[in-house]
Amino acid sequence: MLGAGAVAALAGVPAGAGERHRAHAGSEGATPIPKAKGPIPVSDQSRIFTVGGTDLAANGYALDEFFVSGRANVYDWGADGNSRSPRVRTANAPYTTRMVVRRPKQTRKFSGNVWVELNNPSRAYDAEIQWPAVQEKFMRDGDIHIGLTVKPISIAALKRFDAKRYAPLSMANPLPAADQACGSLPGDPGYNENTSKLFENGLAWDIVSQVGALVRDGGNRNPLRGYRVRHVYATGESQTAFYLNTYVANFAADAKRSNGKPVYDGYVSVSGAGRPNPINQCVAATKVGDPRSELPAKHEPFMRVDSQSEPFALGGYPWRRADSDASNAGYRLYEIAGAAHGWGQLANYDVPQADVKAAGAVPLLYDECIEPRWNSLPRQYIEPAMYANLERWVEDGTRPPHADVLETVDGKTFRKDEFGNALGGVRNPYVDVPIATYYETASGGAFCGVLGHQDDFGSGQLQSLYVTHQNYVAKVAEATARMRHARFVEPADAREIVQEARYTRIP
Image 1 (tube, helix red, strand yellow):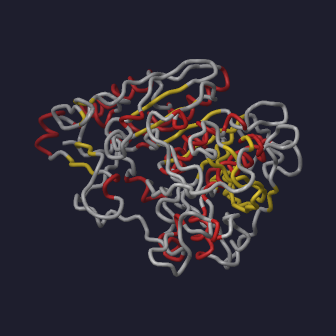
Image 2 (cartoon, one colour):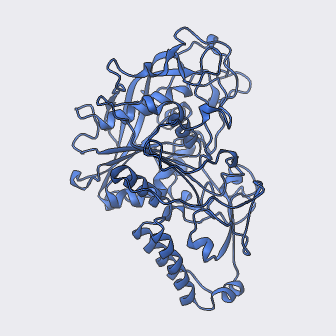
């Protein structure tokens, strides 16, 4: 979910500035391999803070947690504050973060694909948002999913949840508080953990590179040893999609393995509106049209997957760009018609409420929103196809499908059909054979602005539209077949959509 970023300008640049960004690499040009400790034991008194709701054992999966330690640089844009390439501001700051690993218990069932998700911290605790959306694809294919903690505010929440278990974790600010031009300390008026002088958000970039290198490492350092890793991908949702956008624009090109190949083979940036993130604690995010906000001329395959919330509610419209089939800069933009930034399925796979409260945060609830029905258009049936299409793009060069963007009126509002659903975008049976009007926003407090809502059709309108239940199911099956032919739904998820229609009360 969307979170606040640091906005103050950096007043000064400490010694060490001016070194090129690639100074983060090892002596031979390869990204350093951090140390991994674990699996961290689990007991009744010490357990993993993570999202729930999935019976991993029934799917042949195991859940482990590892602590990862290394050294990362903090970057800035240079003495003029406007250099295109990031430069080292503070070198070799120690860090320890964690990664939560979901893996097939039997190595022979491993697909060879590892997905590293940058955990979302916007609710002031660590949450894997894409795992609920894509978990069925991951588990049926035999992928490994890694939830990576990338923001200090999440570490602070983990320590409140279990001070002993998570004591080693740290993304401490390497600068003394007196040398910092922004933020505050605990006890200061208006103290905000997001911009605390105790922490440094800018350690994330090298951490992302180093964890990718770690899981590709062929030695005993790799916590995935025994699994034959072929491809490693990165994904993030909302705030960590901002992270991913920034990472690929400015850092990924220098993340190399010892053989010179990239650490990551491709990226899926979800609900990130194409926007960037500040590269350190005390600078503002770059703006639209700034070259530092854009993907470089050469990059690994990159998908941007947005909902209806992103173009206007989250300001993503100016960040739209055309698709590319270039062999060294593949790009796709997908905007899912009818979908909202935070869809209703998330509530079924959140961190348990008691754990959220123990971490000092507030559980995600829809009760503060005025509209009674959360937008529940099931993104979990649509997004897996985008992940699978990226894998095919990398593995054998099969180009993913193109899709129209959502239609707009003068770039200010969506063009709607007779039912009030948006036109254009990635089409799906929920908007093409509708039983509700789907909105990208909701009214009220907390995150309502991007959770969305829906107005279900009454029985009279359903009777008028479909006459019989069988006719409705047939129309859903036809729309799903079109979606499958266009490669915007995987076969197993297509069957779920039609099965869901069979159990839907019509009229």
